Every structure is written in structure tokens, then in C-alpha cells.
Image (cartoon, rainbow, N blue to C red; front, side, top):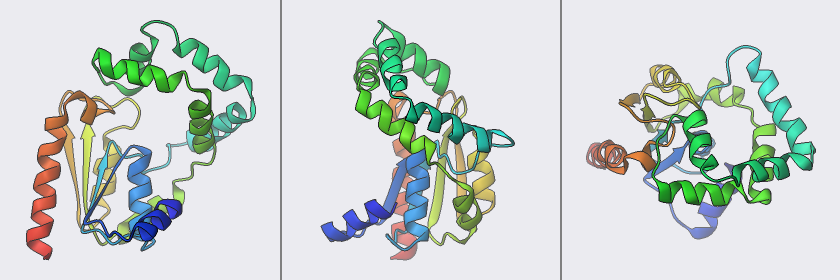
Length: 205
């Protein structure tokens, strides 16, 4: 969040809306909370905005850290992900999303990139959402949380709970979609997103 805030400052832009998917939703909210951006609207798509419940909150980053420190882990993942059709099967199991063949090929390319896999593990090893969960009720921007009803990566109840704890929050369930709703049905995500951007512009300026 701090790095992106520095980038926005260097570019000399001030976004009216900040949109993030999954972990990106947490980054967007943190930027707004810290004053690195001052958007009228923050949008989360399948937002990972709360720590894992129970022991998983501790175990998940520890497991990721062990994998991150093991130089063979990214290599083993890329070997497995390189098998025909594995990218699409992996995404269906882990996200609940049904993607087309072209999108699956792009994900397969990422999954076979060892540097990308290692960086993802590194991010997960350092992931700590406790401060964000504590601070998000003081978010002043409008908050729209879009969440696929079939999301297997982040439960839809996360968006509902976070929206309920903010003064300007709203959660919208997207029926039949998983953790990658913008890639399964772009129009279903774009429609409420564009409406929210228009509304905040009219209401606030």
C-alpha cells in the first residue's frame, strides 16, 4: 500500500475510485486509511479483508513462510501447474470460478513462472490483516464490496461482515460466480461498479 501510494504521488494523480481484487482490496483500503489516496469510492472484488478464522490465522502465513524459504517449492508448483489442463482445474478447486480456455492459458503461464510463484508465496508469508480489520470501520470513502456467491478462496460472508462494520459500506453478492467474477462475467461486475462511480460523483461533487 505504501509503495503504491508513492507511485501515485510520483505520477501526480489522485483517483476518484480505487478498485482491488482479493488481496488488492486490502491494499486499496489500506491506502485510503493511511491517506496515501483520497478516493470517493473504494471497491473490493472478492476482497480478502479479514484474517482467517481460528488457528488458520496463525498457521496460514507460517506454512507460506516455510514454502517461501524452501527453494524447491516454487519449482514443484510450476512443474505441477505445467501439466495439461491443470491451471483450469486448480482454479476451479481453489476459487470456484469457471474460466474459459484462453484465460486458463494465461494463468498457466503465470503458474509456470517460478519468480511469480515465489513472489506470491512471499506476499502470503507476510500477510497480516489484523490491523486492517481493526482500522477499516474508520474508512471515510464509500465502500462497495462485490463478491461471488461461489467463492472458495474468500467466503462471501467476509464482505457482508466488513460492510456492516463501516458507515458507508455495501456488500453485493454476484450469484453463480467464484473468486474471479470479473474474469467469468465482466458485465456482471462492471454494471454495479459503474453505477457506484456515477453515484459518488453526483453525491459528492
